[in-house]
Length: 79
Image 1 (spheres, helix red, strand yellow):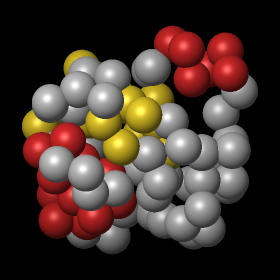
Image 2: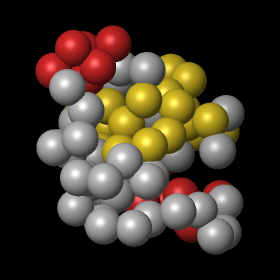
Image 3: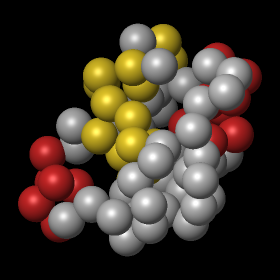
C-alpha cells in the first residue's frame, strides 16, 4: 500500500485513487454499488457509503473510495 495523503487533507479518496491507479473502477460515485471497494492497509476510514453494513464498517478493512475519507492523518490503501 501507498499513503493516500489527499484523503487525509479532506479530499474524497476517489480524487486520489485515479492518480495512483488509472482506470480503477468507479461506477455510481455515490457509495451504493461497491465497485470502488478498496482494502485499507492502515489508518481509519471515515465511512460515508451506503454499501457496507455497520459491522463491516466497524472492521475498517475496506472502504468505498468514491465517498469516504480518512479520520487519521495518513490512510494507506492497497491499490
